[in-house]
Amino acid sequence: QVHKLSHVNINPYIGVCITAPNICIVSEACGRGSLADVLINDDIKLDWTFKMSFATDIAAGMEALHASEVSFHGNLTSSNCLVDRMWVCKIADYGLQRFSKHTYEPEEQLTGQTGKSLWMAPEHMRNASSTGSQPGDVYSFGVILSEIVTRCEPFETLRATTSILRRIMSTEFPPLRPTLNADDCDPTITKFIKQCWSEEPSARPTFRDIKKSMRKINGGRSLRLVDSMLGKMDIYSNNLEVLVEERTRQLEAEKAKTDQLLYEMLPRPVADQLKSGKSVEAELFDQVTVFFSDIVGFTKLSSSSTPIQVVTFLNDLYTYFDNIIPNYDVYKVETIGDAYMVVSGLPEKNRDRHAGEIATMALHLLCDIRTFKIRHVPDTRLVSSYSLLLIITCLFYLIFSGPAVAGVVGIKKPRYDVFGDTVNVASRMESNGVPNRIHISAECRKALLNLGGYHMERRGEIELKGKGKVITYFLNGKDGFNRVRPEPSN
Image (cartoon, rainbow, N blue to C red; front, side):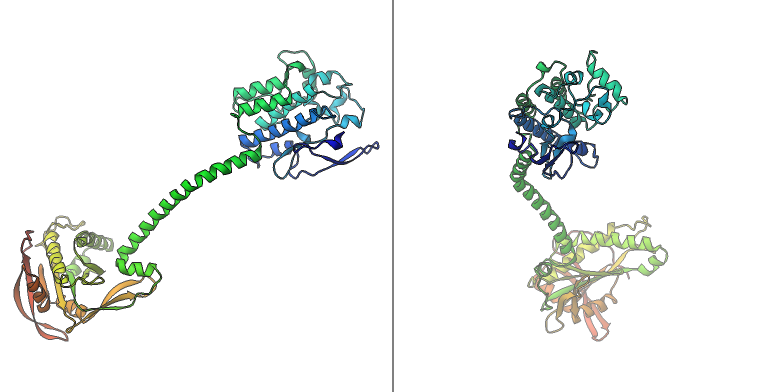
């Protein structure tokens, strides 16, 4: 009879030995042990789906067992419900009453069989010759279900097992049953469990009814773990596209932040070349205008300030500049100490507009610096000993008098830098500048005259290292530029 049983939730017998006293069973190994082992293992996290999957597996196996020639189990406990590697729960130790006619008196059950008796239906406890019944299996299932829900052994709070057995067999009202905590299960499950362990056997449901009730409790959804996993995979599959889109948007947002940071460090065309894995070749630019500014009295100011105050001051000043130059077609090359260097005409050529872009930007910076205050000496005025006076030099060179070359230097912290005679002469002119005046070369003046609208005056000859005497000019204003300039200083 037991050999004919075949069901996914019944652990099959491979062989048996019925020769006393060595009665034994050979069956398939279930790698995760008994349900009792799983439930008491706190390292195994069981959600509601897992718990109800175990209960559904037991109910399905018991329904098949009751429909077979074996008819009933008679000794159903959480210890003979086994769990395989796939987390499928299977009924074991069924049909043993066929092999042994040995019976136990209630007091004898306290030795060796005590644990099993806690799952036994009261009517079978009272009748020592009873081997079991289908309603008795339902009672045992109710006790197992309480274990699954609470993850506690039955009657765990009561220590005296003998007293427990006597109280179960007595007619006390209400009958003694395992404790159900309201925090562990909702009222529907509690009512269902209590129906299974009803004192009256005829009031207990069949396993077919149990399966229907459990499915109804779960909202009509399958309670099998495999079905649940497949359902979750389907939901995951449906949501995967949305998830990918969300992650893609997040990735694009982070990429945009990275690109923005890179574009702050390098010109956009150069940065795009580096991003694409290309090397940036040095390039010759035939027409550029270079801007240098210097702070008059910076050494004196630094000597009377702390290093932190100096760094804070320079950061405030050049952040102020940085917020102005995006209004013009220029590229900030670098800051060295108190020197601020900007160029127009590279890395993107702008024909003859470079001189005008730098000149107008210089006027803008010179006028707006009047409102700038040094944080650690906020009452400083432009005419004080710490006056913030700028020496600004704008220099334009044509290709024949000093071309500029630009390119990326180095692979660690790469910089886009500008080289050539144009840069050198601009730096030397800066050292001959006048505070609060914009000092320009003759070539720059010529370019501005071609553009028209700029107001300039001759400064005269100055001596430049390596160039001898050269004629330079001051830029005083521009048509339509109405900002107030600071008074020149000598």
